[in-house]
Length: 182
Image 1 (spheres, rainbow, N blue to C red):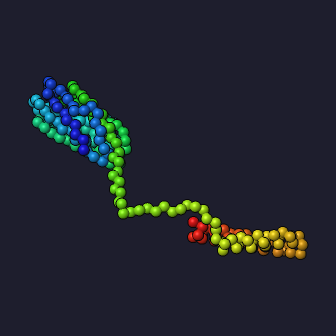
Image 2: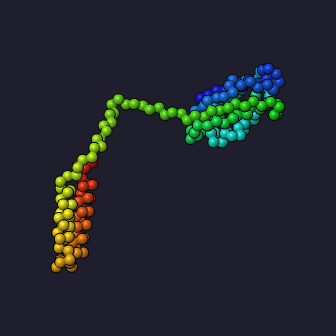
Image 3: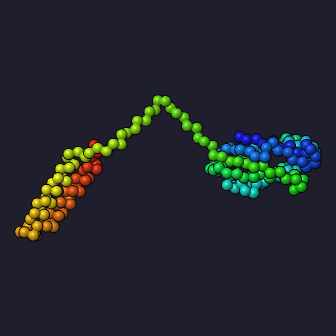
């Protein structure tokens, strides 16, 4: 929570004095403006014309007789940025600007010493021998098929091709699903 002190009528009629020209505030918190009137009761206006990305506050006209505090909520969903607040007295005769710097609050990370995260080894292992058997069978059938191609076994070409592809796919799927390969 950030507080801005605004003194009215301290140096003269409708005078405005602010405690800071630039105020930091965290997203999700309130910006509090404390008015203190040192003279006769007066009207003051607070407005923002470029703060829609940070707050729902737009304009408020207040009657200040003594000390009054106003809270301007800053959205938690707002990011980092800057907007201005105009403080006006004397029905527009005097205006003072305050720059509000909004920053996203850093989350507090609570480290629990009892929780230990063990990283797994990402080393590539060779696939198990069982996963390689279908691939080896597919290669042997392919070599036999190549040696007899164009001979008496020509009508069996489609069957041999399908068998080779299925065996190769079975080997690849087995190798990929094997828990030892991870």
